[in-house]
Amino acid sequence: MATFTKHKLSGSTDGKGIKVTSNSAGSGVAVHTAVSGTTDFDEVWLYAYNSSSASVNVTVEFGGTTSPDNTIQQSVPAQSGLYLLVPGLPLQNAGAVTAYASVVNVVALYGFVNRIDQ
Image 1 (tube, rainbow, N blue to C red):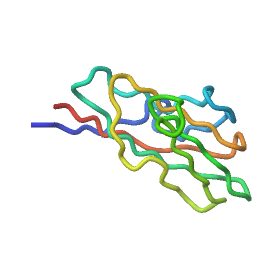
Image 2: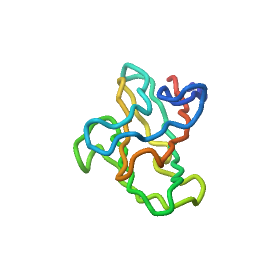
Image 3: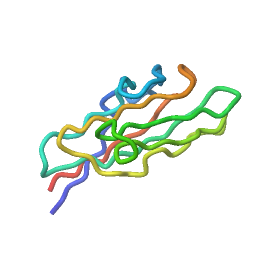
Image 4: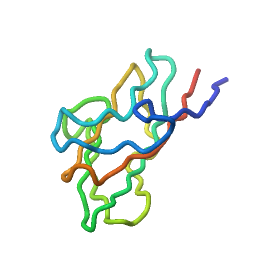
């Protein structure tokens, strides 16, 4: 029987938001590194807050940098609360989640993972 445990994003300090300080592919800010191996996996939930007065495009590199199969691109509205970017997608084998934005230092990422042990 599978067990679920909730964890903070590995790129977060004490569960705080992760500021997106990069604006280029392949050099995004570290958000999370999934559990190693191929038996267990992390269910990733990721939200963004945009503090600027205009929409900002955010790209999440999910387990790789190849577009479109490893990237999720969203326009995050200005000052509209938390905006869902990753809706519980599974990741394993130490896959990395990174992010960059069209404008730096205005988007903060929040979230958690449900670690599923099988």
